[in-house]
Length: 316
Image (cartoon, rainbow, N blue to C red):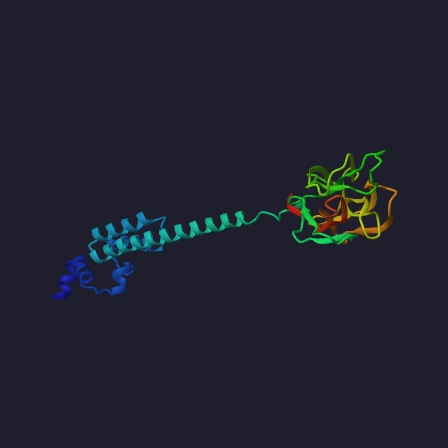
């Protein structure tokens, strides 16, 4: 009987066999073992959704719909699930792309070259060392320093008027003169010196005013002069030197030239000459030390405060 049915109705038997076929869980999830056209389309759609990295999410959804039409609800659900996975993958790729862009931006930000340094000024140290010629230790000395960053460039002084029958030949008063230091903005770098305000005057000013200044663009580094053996300072010779900037980027240095006597204040015939008293190598005169004696009528000691000077560097 079965043989007869098979010969008369071949398609009915085939359909019955297909309807009774069994499928594994993996076959249902992926659609890879489905034979009918609807199931096959569903499987292909689901696979497309699974393999897509965000760019073919719509294909995954279509696969799910096709599975539903083919009669496999499970396969159709797989297509939907796979489409969701495609969305998740797309989000991951977007994150990776964002991270990569941020990394490139970071590289660009940090890719600037080294900063070139150039001389922008002269720095004068806070600590000072005193250089003093002492004649009469009576009374306490006055110590005055120029404003920050400034140095001595000379001295004012006074003596008794020429022809005064009661006049003295020694120095009656002294007053340091400060100056500013400015570095040129472009090479060749040089230090320009400009006269600024004076320090306080000490001793009693006499009638005849004098001034002893360093040559243009030079600074005071010490002094010499004349004095009596035990009483007073007769005269002060201002010793000056030029400043130059040596080296190349990024290593620059301040060089102090050979000191020499510029001009003098005081009486030039009294007492005896005393040896030059200079700041240490690398130091500049930045302040005055003056001791008064005999009720402020004469100088019992004269000196300068010295401080180390160096080049300040900044962006070129």
